[in-house]
Length: 296
Picture (cartoon, rainbow, N blue to C red):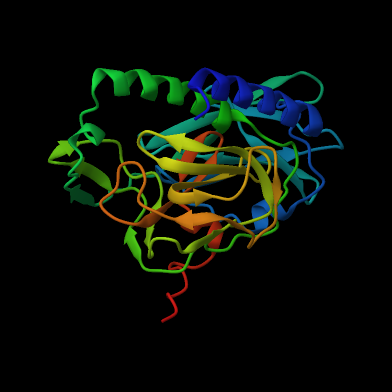
């Protein structure tokens, strides 16, 4: 097993390598306008807001919200910001900060609507996955530092043209659920759980670059794929990982298999979609409400 410190160093070095290859993180310029075509706007916590920033020339403005850079694309000679909204954000008016190519700064308002998510209560037999021991807390804190680097890694152009479901099977837990483990409240569900037998192949949902592949305390064996402009997919609880950090993957390529590693009640794939380091509803990029059915 690779020491956590070595893994953290590897992630940081990989992040620098990726950013160096695709150009700086703040130069979010792309000539590919497909990003907005496969993304559905939904102005709610856990949703995606698409904000018109006005006419633009060859150089796009730089935009940020909640102290994080957000994706900006050019479409029909206009700049457009694509913003992932955290589940924790309250309803009301918010502002995206914009720095134009001439250096002038401005704010552009957008609204977030209120939305109520259902509750889910689960029983976890391994109580350390609910109330970690002190030694587990040390590991979790180190992993959270790695995750911060992973989630902030981004390519400056879109690598994907559309998305597919990564595995067939019924949805066992939808996005956004207010979760209780052994009757204790925890963070809302930041992805979709798809029930499938142990060993079922998992496919990359779109073309992209693997930015992390490894074992996490809560998530088990996990893979993170960057698809451009900070749009990422995350695959958790895998029984096997078939890709490595730094590897380019194609849509439909097998990246591992379904398992029950980490904090689980049984074999399934937890699949998340991230945008500006925020988990958003995967249904907003996939185009269909349900994955394909398992074949007998």
